[in-house]
Image (tube, rainbow, N blue to C red):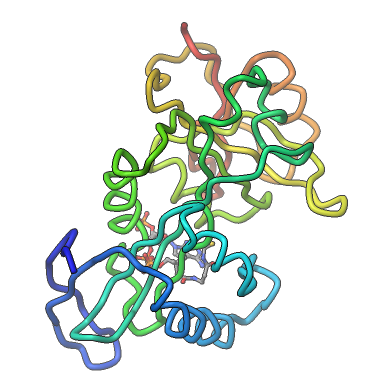
Length: 237
Ligand SMILES: CC(C)(COP(=O)(O)OP(=O)(O)OC[C@H]1O[C@@H](n2cnc3c(N)ncnc32)[C@H](O)[C@@H]1OP(=O)(O)O)[C@@H](O)C(=O)NCCC(=O)NCCS
C-alpha cells in the first residue's frame, strides 16, 4: 500500500514520540474506521458536536464516491479524514453559494475528520487535510470547489477550514432547520485579496448574514478583547 506521508507523532498518554504514516483507506478498512469513530464519539463531552457518519455513508465514500486518508501508528488507525462526492439534488451546497448548475458536478465536500484523544495536539487534522487534498487530482473526475458546512460557534472546525484558505460564503438553515455556515475554496481561482475588513461577534448571526448579502465573505478569526470574532471582508476580484 502506497504511503502518502511519514513522520513522527507524540502520544500524549505515553509522552512518547512514535513513527506514523498515512495512506488511503479502502472498503476493507471499514470496521476499523467505524471503531475509531465510535471511540471518538465516546470521548466527546457533547455527543451532538460531531456529525458522525453512518455505515451507508462510509460505504458510499469508499465505493468510489469520495476519498479517505488514514493515519497509522504501526498498524493501528489513529485518525482519518474524508472527502465525499455529493449527489446533485436540491440540498447540494453549490446552490447555497450561488454556483451555476453546470458547476455543481465540480464540487467535492470535506466531511468528517477524527483523531484519537491520545494523539491530539499534533495538528494531525491539518496534516490529514494537506495529504487528502494532494490526492484529489488522482480521482477520476476533476474537482474545482471544495465545500463544507460548519455549525456556528464551532471554533476548532472553523479554524481548520480557515487554515486551508476556505471562506464562509453563506449562512443558511440546513439539516432540519439548523443554521450552518457554508464554506468553499475555489481551487482554480482562490481568493487572494480583500478590502473593507470588519469583525463581527461569533453569535451575531444576523449581522453576519447581512454582510454576506452585501458581498462580504468570512475569512478568519480576530481576537477582540480576548474573544474570537469572525473577520469579514470583500474579495477584490
Ligand atoms: C477536531 C480534531 C480532529 C482535532 O485534532 P488535532 O488535529 O489533534 O487537533 P490539535 O489538538 O492539534 O489542535 C489543532 C488546533 O485546533 C484547536 N482546537 C482543537 N480542539 C479545540 C477545542 N475544543 N476548542 C478550541 N480550539 C481547539 C487547537 O487549539 C489548535 O489550534 P492552533 O493550531 O491555533 O494551536 C480532534 O479534536 C477530534 O477528533 N475531535 C472530535 C471529532 C471532531 O469534532 N471532528 C471535527 C469535525 S468533523
